[in-house]
Each structure stands twice: as C-alpha cells, then as structure tokens.
Amino acid sequence: MICDRARRLFGACWDDELTQAERDGLEGHLASCPRCRTEYDEFSRALELTASLPRIEASADLMDRVLAGARHATTAPDIVREAGVRWAPVAVAAAGAVLVVAAVLIGSRLEWKAPASNQTPQMVKIEGPLEPRIVQNPRAIPGKRGPEASQLNSENLFDPDKNVEFILDPVALRRGRVKRDPEGQQAIITF
Amino acid sequence: MDRVAVDDQKAFPELVRRFQGRVTNLVSRVLNDRECADDLAQEVFVRVFVHRRNYRHGSKFSTWIFTIAANLAKNEIRRRVRRRNWFSLDALEETLKDRAIQLADSTESRETTLEREQLQDAVGRAIVTVPEKYRLALVLRDIEGLPYEEIAQVLGIPGGTVRSRINRARGMLKHKLQPLLAKAGDP
Image 1 (cartoon, rainbow over the protein chains, first blue to last red):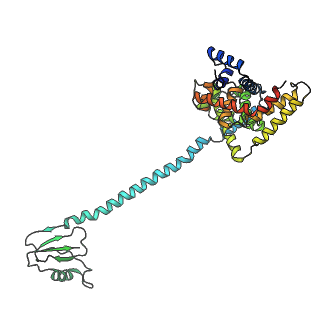
Image 2 (image 1 turned 90 degrees about the vertical axis):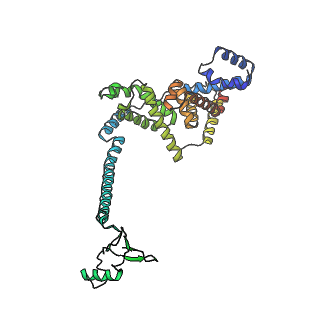
Image 3 (image 1 turned 180 degrees about the vertical axis):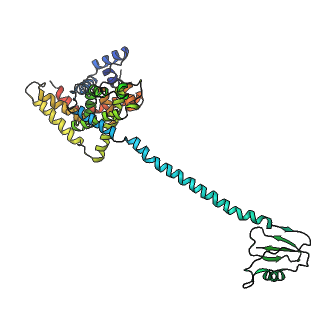
C-alpha cells in the first residue's frame, strides 16, 4: 500500500468502517512507514482530543427562558402568519383595482362603439341616378343654420341633376368635402 | 413530540429537559461562545414550540432539532463573519504555540486539571477556525457522534458530501493542532 492510499483510509479507520483487507493493508503499511505512523498518531490524537471535550451543559435558567419565549411566541403573532395577514388586504385591494379597471375599460369600449353603431345606417352607397343625401353641417357656413344653410350647401357642392355616384365615408359624418375624379363620373364625399 | 404538537402542557418542558444538553453543547462547540450558545439554544426550543405542528411524524426528532440548531448556528457564524467579530488565525497559532510551550515546560504530570483545561480550550478554539460548512459536519460527527446518514439529513446534503467534508475538516483540525500535538506527543 502506498502512502497516499493509506492516508485516505485514516478517516474510515477511525470510524471503524474498513474492511478486514483494508485494515490489514493499512496496519501493514503503518508498521513499515514511520511518516505515515506519525501522521496517523497525530490524526487520531486530534480526534481523541475533540471527542473528549467536556460536554457543555445548559445554563440553569435555560428552561425558564425557553418557556417564557414560548409563551411570548404564542401571544405574539407568528412571523409567517403575520406575513400572510399583512399581504391579504393588499391582494384583495389589488384584485379589486383590477376589477374596477376592467369594468371601466369594458364600459368605455361599449360607449365608444355605441355612436358607431348609430352611424351605420348613414353609411350608404348610392348607385344610379339618385339624389344624394346631404348631412346637415351647421358649422359649414358660419352664421347660417337650419334648412337654409343645408340648401345652400347642396347648391355649392354638387349638381343634383347629374348622374353621379356618391360614396359616403362611413367614419365621420360631421364635416365633409367632395372630391371628383378627373372624368367627373364619380364624386366621393368625405366627412 | 407528538404530545407537544397537541399542546400537552407537560410535554414541552420534558422535551426541553431531554435535549437542552445536546443542543447547548452543539451550538457551543460550533461557536465556541458559551453565552451566545445559551441564547441560540433558547431560540432553538422556541422555534420547536412555534413550529411544533410542522414536525413530520415518523422522522427522528433529534434530526429535526439538530437541523434547527445547525441552521441557527450557521446564521450566527455568518453574522459574525459579516461583523468581523472574529479572532485571527495568527492569534490562534500564537495561542497554540503558547499552550504547547507550557505543556513542554511543565515538570509536573501533563494530566493536571489546568493543563487539560488549557488543552481543551486550545482544541475548542481550533475547531472554530475550521470553515463553517466543514465545522458543522465535524462537530455533529466527532463531538455529537451522529451517524453519517443523520448528518446528511441535518445538513441537507448527500452522504458522500458529508464524508468528504468530515475528512477535510479532520485534516484541517489536525493541521491547526499540529504544534500542540507535536509537543504533547514528545516523551
């Protein structure tokens, strides 16, 4: 047995975990190698000293202190439980906030969609020789309001006698202007 | 422990009485600080009481309580390292040399009480210079005498790692005690 191998067995030898063959090999090596013998003697002496350290007894008042600590711990909230209680309202508040925000978003979405659905019937594609519908825009001509202004607008924008196709922009119907294609066959009114 | 878990009022003091010595000895040897060991031992038992319902039936109670004690001791060691409330290795080596000289110069029997106390004090101080992860395994094995399997459970590491840590710790301890062992070994 070589020295390295022998020294690796010191711990197992101390713990009495060597096989008989290992023990025989180690003992044979220690008998013939003074350096390893000295190493093993120092190793076992260090462990003997460690194992023979006197036991340190608990102080006389430890029991009283422990019981007082246990009493205090039962009256004071446990750290884990306290943490749970501390987080519960926060979680409830956060969930509530999420619900409120969701409700507001859904509500605003419904409100936003409502006018669009009202405007849908006005998205009209007029084909053939039909007289176009004019959406009244009181602000189109400052100072003129009502049917009079509407009449004036219609006269200015197009000729009702002409056979033109109107495509009304479905997006916004408040303001509009007419564009004609170069051949004058089609006019698009955007609002 | 089962009686403690169901709030049997006599059971907890009995449990403390049975384990207070082992717990105090473990943390004392790991920290080499008697006063702090008392405080930690108290904390260990209070935690046992607070978490009594978390104790898993069927597992060994000593393993559970040693796990709590080892964790608290580890925390204390790390706190000390952070605060650098730690004596230096040089100081330890000086102490060991002094002890060795005293032993060598002694004309009376080496087994006098004073010498034995000095030797034990030197060994206690040498143990605390072993790094924490090796020290805990060393104390659990060579002072508390726990089997390797239980040490693995207490420290939460594989059995092979326990063996290797204990081997390294023993080597370190022997190295640190070398001056003392050499002098003490002389005829």
